[in-house]
Image (cartoon, rainbow, N blue to C red; front, side, top):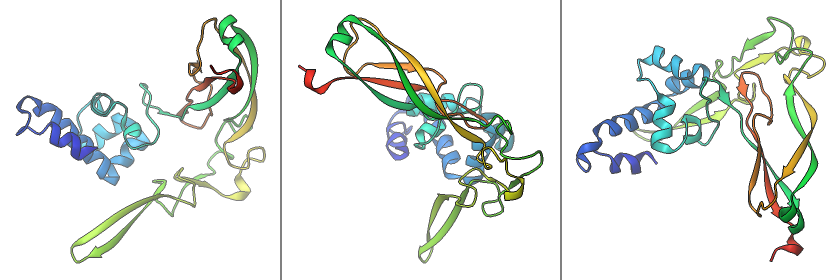
Amino acid sequence: AYRKLAKEYHPDKNPNAGDKFKEISFAYEVLSNPEKRELYDRYGEQGLREGSGGSSGMDDIFSHIFGGGLFNFMGGQSRSRNGRRRGEDMMHPLKVSLEDLYNGKTTKLQLSKNVLCSACNGQGGKAGAVQKCNACRGRGVRIMIRQLAPGMVQQMQSVCSDCNGEGEVINEKDRCKKCEGKKVIKEVKILEVHVDKGMKHGQRITFSGEADQAPGVEPGDIVLLLQEKENEVM
């Protein structure tokens, strides 16, 4: 994606796109630099600016150029406007009849989702029990460098298995008894769904902020995809 955009907006090809080319180059620099990526991952745009002197509006840059924030471009999670990481949306199909679509219908849907543990307030253990993961040095990822040929190396990044990508660990004896240190527990959520008159197969009904909860993360949305029952599809 970077090469395609860099070629499209290169000043030699597009003289009026100098500023956009600089934005693309800066965005790629953040993505390809583990330290800058970690700053953004942990502290958001403000941390990136303070840590590297980067320009403001990082998410605006990524949204303007790539159609989404930094984490969307990386194929991961996005970041909300208030700087908090945004969780993934939960997609669920909702089977409805042709009559339901024509006349409208109100129904209830039962779903299971993660919520912050009330016993430890999403901390995973008692105060002071959370420690930085030594295996990944608190980054949540492990970086391996493999030499392919003289003067040529390949950098590989994977989620740290010791801390499951959180960058933090809790000793077993200090873990919350209710959530076992996971910081979240499963909860059944019952949604009241209103299918409006005239809705069509493929339309979506969104419940904002009702998806899985996680510490320091703004919940995503629950999105219901209307699917007309197969034997009734014309």
